[in-house]
Length: 231
Ligand SMILES: O=C(CO)[C@@H](O)[C@@H](O)COP(=O)(O)O
Figure: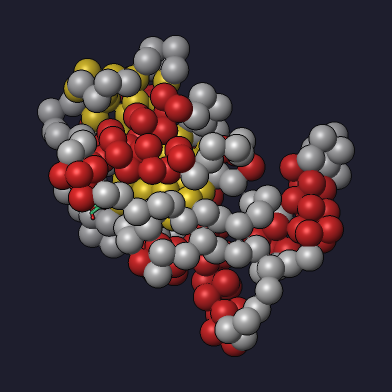
């Protein structure tokens, strides 16, 4: 893919965050990797969504050096590239501070799978990461944030739960490309809102029975999936 097309796709995905009310001002960033070229296109740091232009998107290599672009890339770039290096089956990453997902992050709580809406998209709870130590925060903070996320996935396929909430911070989601990572950010916000309301109505609400959780996830994502029109 040309850099021009990569930037266009990343710009469109970033603007979709704003259309879905998942960001205000500079509250997020989206990137997409081109693994053949070994580059990542990402939103520039501190540029309001109201002012963002396609030519502002920055191209960096997998070690975060600028390859093309006149602006400084997102302050979260090292977290994105860390995820691309460690999760070899993802193609796009989104970070937001969407309200309900961030509330769970601030409460430092994983989101239990309370119902089938959640199970349709994520096979089990949505993990909240461990907290960073002071030394990690004062060291290579954004790289450590990536490691914090990866640690939550030691025994899972990243695409079985393409989202995480970072303790005390906010969500990161991913997908096969930038566009799908934004789709997962929108799903996460809705799932987080439903879970918050469930917990508010019933403080001792229990996770969904495992059999129906498996049924809903696997009928959409399993090897014998039959949901929708894919043959
Ligand atoms: O988490 C934060 C700020 O706390 C950042 O993700 C957010 O402000 C976006 O930063 P960038 O504008 O991408 O550098």
